[in-house]
Length: 422
Image 1 (cartoon, rainbow, N blue to C red):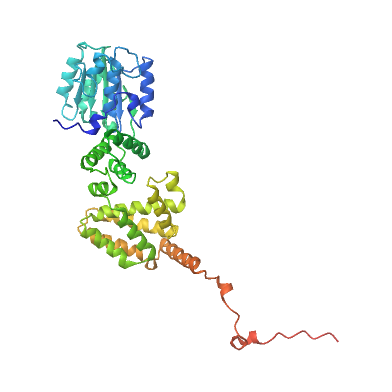
Image 2: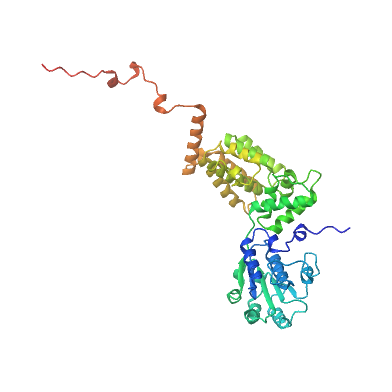
């Protein structure tokens, strides 16, 4: 029995309506297809895994659909079936990887073949992937063909670096920039896919998968595929996701944040020792700690951030963040985040990351040794918080009147009354 295809191949969109997070591109393309106003050359640019090549294939299907002009391919005709997800492909839709076919000889070969009419379809479509890898000489060899192609020819360039496509080619194309997919949209998409796969996924694990994918649909689905493959009877749990993806467990972050709030150096360095003993990467721990401090800074400024969706966390995690932020002052949190961010930069290429992590923790613990403005504000935050907890009155109210014998001599002498007039 053959193993199933990877998730990103099994769920590759077949129409523009299935492409998520790129409505600013797909809607204009659908309108152009429906109105039969398709250009002879397109340039799709954007980060990897966001749907550039997929959209190029959908555009080629729609162009060669028997019902054309149509916004979305019908999926029933021979051309649509050939170019479907599991189809054999079409002889008239040629995909070229410019990383290995970007030279001037490849461009000349393409130019010679391009003038032949399509075999079965309406258009011959060239999809040139990684177009930034085409050499300047290769682009110049294609220039005349891209500028004035025969009526049966269409070009679609896809690239992650549009600035490397020479301006003379860029100016002859319609440029559509793709973007990273928003985290909330990816979370709902992953929940839907895991339901179709019949595997449950914990809400607390979703943000970790989205974070690992970094806004790329393909990368996110690859991570989810790995987790689904390793999931047991209980599905994808938070423990499985954090362990496989290498993220710091929330319990460790809660421990170190609580220790910072209490000023407990023993607990802080105990957590650092636990991080090293369990084989975790100190840099990853520092990065996760910085992310937690960033969340606390936002919660400190916007207390309802977890409920309003400003921070993508589960409900119980949101409650913990609110209670932790209440134990710090805003200046304290900002100072701690600045120190951790500076330390994370210093950690790059460091030979002793544990030593640097311990030094970062020591700096966070000692605002008294920090004579900068942030350090003074952090000390003020601590003093105000202690005064609020102990209920200490202000200085004027707290000072009792001194007894007469303790007053200065000038204060003990009662002022003379003015003599009455004769």
